[in-house]
Length: 240
Length: 291
Image (cartoon, rainbow over the protein chains, first blue to last red):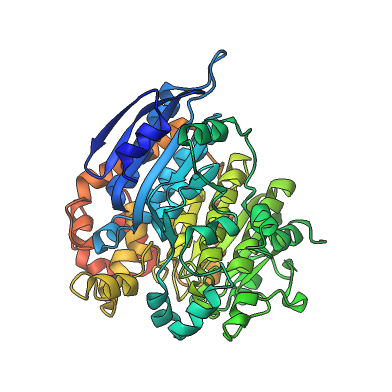
């Protein structure tokens, strides 16, 4: 689904969103009130400029729409379509990881100030681009047709030296390495797939009370990540 | 003087912390291995490439983790990531003076790519939650594999980074960029180019690293002690300042093609000589010139 169609479905009561190159931002009217929207289109590679721009928008939202006695802090909806981090020497030279971390810190500030953060993967989410966007939300959701991955299996096979056939065979039973939004759902990174009335799904997501990072628990409940929760718990409570 | 670069993760922890103070959680005797590696008939490790525990630094209680580059380049898998998350959450309960992350990682472990990526995301959230709770997280980066991929983002989420010249910090490693974009974009065998693009000196000059030290564990220890009283600050003022700084970097250096251009623009005379300087003389020479 393209971003404009998506915005119409998410905000049938209207939205004001400005597109500029691969980036867009604005405001939508949900049944729970105004929602700030930040996103990208065309499987944008996330480089230093885009990460910087998104961070600036988060800071602006925190500054201009804080919690008030009669109104909660304005929620933020991330609609990021990304093929991953931009691969270039220049981005590395300028410290792209620092720009992405800055964006993550700005979103944490927003969270600490009571802004809800919802992520919706509507097309593509890959590797570092995913880490620096939808995965930073309180909860990340996805459309069923969206594509989520670290790397495709042929490339993975070349690097790990594991035969492609073996990877393909194993990926039928294991969600742990192969591309696919279903795998991320099973492992708890994607909370749910959004189907039907998207404006309704958004309203429901905005009603979820603040919580900690529960992704390990969901991964365990869905039998996709059997160890993460237990291992973290053991380290947290180990004697000594 | 023990080289930090050459030492194993265990040796680094033993020499960095107060002698004999380190106590490991979930040690190798517990045999918590990655089932995913086993399934792919790939050798597994009883600590999954990361050691976590507690100790003291200059007499003060700390929690610490060290990634072992010798095992799969310190890459993050499900167990590896969960150990780090558990340690960071423990710190939220215990409120030690600081958490030390001795990073050495190529990022996500491809054999369990989805679990690794999600694990890194959980580490990111745990670091941010911990800092929000007032506990500083300090990063030490001087190992053979550097700190790349999602761990490169994690490092920059923390309060301070100590690097040696040999340490490297970035997102996509030079080999990844070369493989994907061609050798014209990034020649990963050009060591001088790699060091001056992602190495400790450039990161220090850019303001990405907070301290640059010589390649020995004692120097890392001294720097870590000096940073123990860092107060985490995720206020809007602090992040606005960081935003302005990152914006100025794009404006001033956005069109630079090489680290040497940036170093010149910083007003450093004879920048081509910087890679040859020892850590102390380097720090003295660039004093007041960092971005």
